[in-house]
Length: 104
Image 1 (cartoon, rainbow, N blue to C red):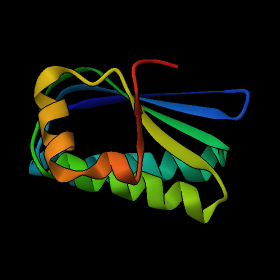
Image 2 (cartoon, rainbow, N blue to C red):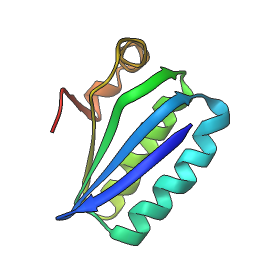
Image 3 (cartoon, one colour):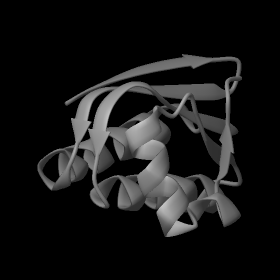
Image 4 (cartoon, rainbow, N blue to C red):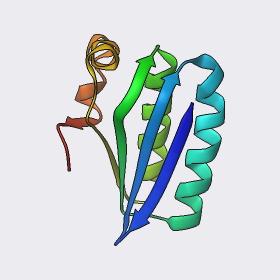
């Protein structure tokens, strides 16, 4: 699991590569928290375009990112979700809390 972070004009983009399972989730949350704390963005885009697999631990990553962004007065959303991760997100009902979009 790899996460690439870029920050520009108040927007933090988190791009996920590989598999987001319970092993990768804890490390991911730590890296995401550091990136948010360092940049204090107003927007955080979670890009799953290159995510091959996600289990329910990915829901915790998305919700944790959403919660942290709310704490600093920002917003998080998810983009470019492949089929398998979308099934997990849809089954969880997370779309009622965090916006899921095609692209930004």
